[in-house]
Length: 83
Image 1 (cartoon, rainbow, N blue to C red):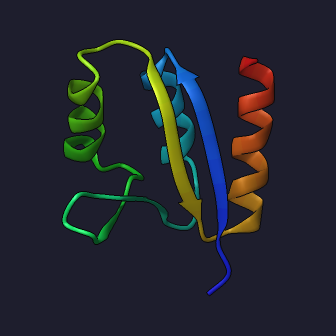
Image 2 (image 1 turned 45 degrees about the vertical axis):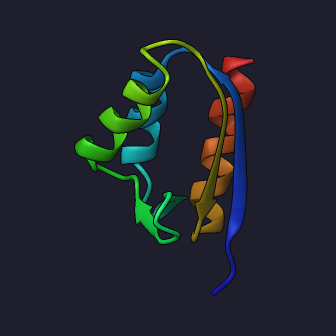
């Protein structure tokens, strides 16, 4: 399986980022402390956990694995538009 890494820095508007992730067609995964990874798309529990970890403040770094190249491209477009 070929994955692309999307590295987000200083994420202030997590709701907007998660809406973009929810649009993706293939899994967008994030490593979790247990060593496994979970799909972040439409996973409200995991999305809320990430926000809670940062006390509703800017997330300094968020590295996500994209299984689909087209999803990766769309996330990069989002990141550029938000910069």
